[in-house]
Image 1: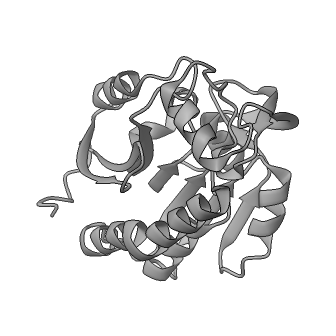
Image 2: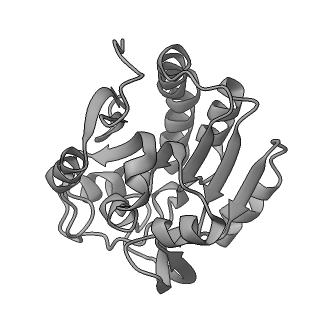
Length: 238
């Protein structure tokens, strides 16, 4: 069942979900040489999407899992930097939870009584609750940008399996100068303390407006694109 699930996920992601996102970005987010941050880059599928649109752009990728980090480094993309670190609300050493479906590895704790998690555990016929803790480094995006003397990000993509709010909390200074945020939002109770409403309110309070969402078919999450209302040069999204 795990094999079938992964085949389905990869097929839908590659031939339906990501192409929809790519079409929208290409039509509406007009940049020549953008600076793009990919937080939770995993195996690089979104990174490759960005590169196909913005071949002259610069890309900063963050992936705390060492195995996936090593895979990312093998991707041949111009102007790409890969960092084996997590982004969060504090600067510290932390632990990442590695489970039988590595695309759901997360710093966030799984909620053991989650109905969604029980369904997923049944489908893959694996003990998804069995995890391995991997020691990682965590840094705030504000700290990273200060060290690297970065004061502007055109696109900030965040997909950190339930840890998105913590990434945002550590980015409050640089967010003023982020044009767009692409963020995965959960519609399930899989992670302890996760609140989609809290994320949406945070973005609203920081002058971001949702302009598009892409629901992943038969899955309980969606990718949402937010625009920084401080910048008025982008209008009429469709």
